[in-house]
Image (cartoon, rainbow, N blue to C red; front, side):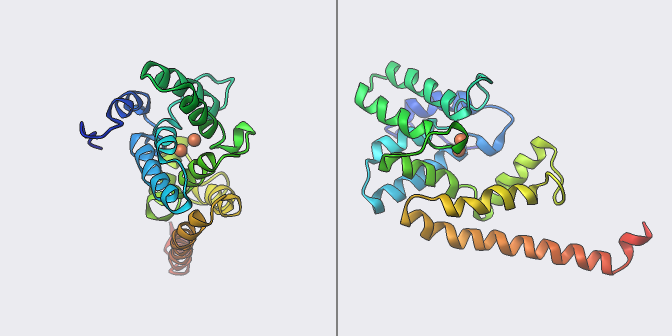
Length: 209
Ligand SMILES: [Fe+2]
Ligand SMILES: [Fe+2]
C-alpha cells in the first residue's frame, strides 16, 4: 500500500484523493494517480510546462470513475476536483487550468487537450498503461471486467485496440520517447504468450483433455 508522506506539499490533496480512489478498481487507484504525477513531473521538466498544474491534475484525474453515470469519468473527476481545490483555497486561475487538463485526459469525453499541461496529463496517463506496470494494470482490469486472457473481448483485444493505439495519439515528443520501449516490452510479452500457447497445443496435452 502506498505511503502518503506528511512532508509532501500536496499531502492534503492526496488524502482527499485517497478516499475517492479507495474502491475495488485497483487499475485506477491512488497508486496509478501517484505514478501519473511522477510521469507528469518528468514530462513537464523536459517539455517546459507548469508542474504545479500537472501535479494537481494528475492526483485528481480519475477520482470520478465511480461517479454519475450520465457523465464521462473525466467530466465527473473535473467537477469533483473543482470542489476540492476550492475548499483548499486554490485560485480560480489554477482551478480552471486543472479542470481543463482533467476533462481532456480521456477521449471518451470528446474534449481535445489544448494546453501543454493538458497534453502532458494525457500522455502521462497513457504511459502508465505500458510496460510491466501496464500489463499488471491490464490484467487487474481484466479480472474486474471478467475478460479472458485471449480471444473475443479479452485482455489481448484491449491491448490491441486501445493500448497499442495510444502511440498514435500522444501529444509530446518526450512521451513518445518513453512510450516506445515500454510498448516493445508488452509486444514481446504477447509474442511469448502466443508461443507458449502454441507449444502447449503442439504437445497434444490440450487435445487429450
Ligand atoms: Fe481516466
Ligand atoms: Fe488514469
